[in-house]
Length: 96
Image (cartoon, rainbow, N blue to C red; front, side, top):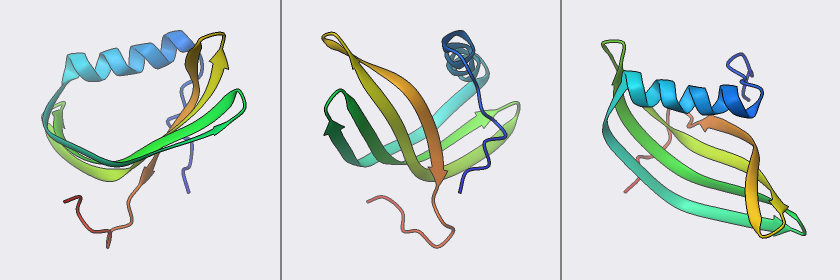
């Protein structure tokens, strides 16, 4: 269960968190699989499994889990309104 300690609120702060990662991190490997999208009227939940290895602030990090988004339809476009990363349990199999 996520603890929400790293929660970022607001479009500008969320965008900045992505920019900070791009500016400070170096991705070595990224695998994505098992995409799923469920649409409920003007709302949707989208997710995919991931494995990533990257370096940030001189530290090598390896993570795996599921990236989950909640989206709403705004006219002809979809906008992400919520996102969380769900870490894979330690015994989870690697993505093939």
